[in-house]
Image (cartoon, rainbow, N blue to C red; front, side, top):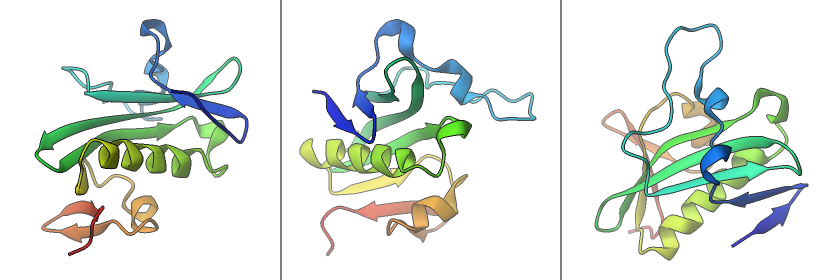
Length: 131
């Protein structure tokens, strides 16, 4: 399924479209690349000729999904790409029976907190169906 908004599309990547360069943090020797094994749901945001963002999402138990990564190219940040990818990931989780989304890392806590993610025992979570 292809979704068009703000000049980019979101869809599963072809094998050669996984943006490995987005997984490398700036000014660091650490590589926190794509998940191994691959995530159940990997989606990219792409303009006509450039991959500008990616997220990885996994079902970790019944009703619970984990966002392993959500990364936007530096030159496209603050343009709604991350917000759109997050909404897309939550939509995929919900369409697959998800009730809660958790984050693999608290790296971007400030970003996710804007979207009603809350912290429980050091983990950020989002409830799709509030109790």
